[in-house]
Amino acid sequence: MLTASESKAALTLVTGEAVSTTLRLLGRASGSPEQQRAILLDGVPDVINYYSFGSSALAADYYDDERERQAAPKLYVAEPVIVERTEKIRRAVAWAADPLFTDDPSATGGRLADVVQLETARPYRDTILANRQRDPSAVGWRRITNGGCKLCRMLADRGAVYSDTTARFATHGHCKCTAQPVFTSSDYGEEASVMQYLASRKRRTPAQRAVLREYLNTNY
Image (cartoon, rainbow, N blue to C red):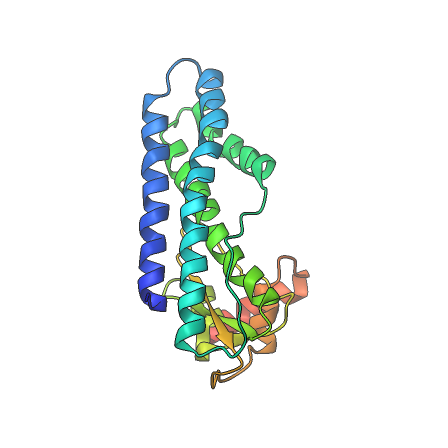
């Protein structure tokens, strides 16, 4: 039975393998910048898709482990969730390939690593959040992090639980945070604060961004 930290470490291994596979693909790519970009556009989505099965299955197993650990009262079995994102991934890969057309093509590797790590981890988080919404015993989820940037630390602070079903799992390049489901059987602690929900939004007004920036700089 995996703990939250063990599952997080396993996800890091999965995403690391996906990044390594992608960088080997980049290393084998040859020809003009256009030809190399075409190889990446064709191959990288397949790499992400392959490892996404692993990350989503890992999350579903971990979700069931947490149900058992927290003695969730109603029967439910988690299912892996992989959201179709091929076109978005292809656009991200095209962005990552832009340095191939410059005097610094080596920057492509770092960009690709960011894209692949983020997209391979996404099905893990999607699986936790989607099953949390379907599970009659779930009340929310909390963010699991090992320090990281000030935004991640703030979002995970106090072990806060995000019970709003519309709450988004905010991420960034090289973000290694995961989500832990929380059930009605648990003494789950504090609800996420207004500022934590604000920081989770995908879109914020300039005024909200300024407030959040000041809050992070002051407290974290």
